Length: 137
Image 1 (spheres, helix red, strand yellow):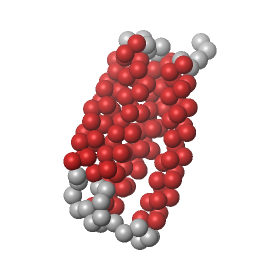
Image 2 (image 1 turned 60 degrees about the vertical axis):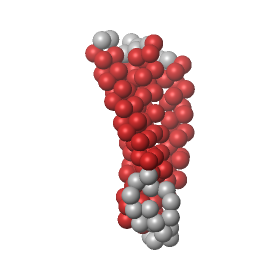
Image 3 (image 1 turned 90 degrees about the horizontal axis):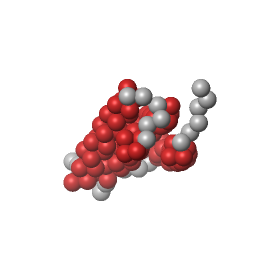
Image 4 (image 1 turned 135 degrees about the vertical axis):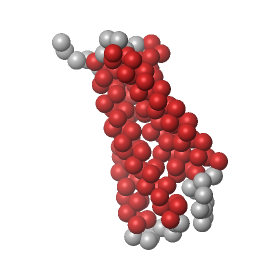
């Protein structure tokens, strides 16, 4: 059997791979935070680390998910959820951590924390659809 990307898988994988550069920039910014070059509360530092970690892990998981979805030939709505759910979670969850901690001297999350929970739902939908699709292939 020869592996071939679907168009959706190829496009999403390409975008995800390019997004890794933004995660690298985030890592560089974290080094400035821990050196004390960027004034932040301990709460903001913790959320910056959480946002960065979620971005890296979920983009990596999303890339693996694309391969599984394409190998299993999952199509339709299930295919889009399988390929895009985890990647959407990477954006929503990491963005939620950053947005919820934005603002000078913040010590508690803003209402933007809801993005983290929406991202968690997207993650669940992505991995559940991928699991169902792989088992059904």
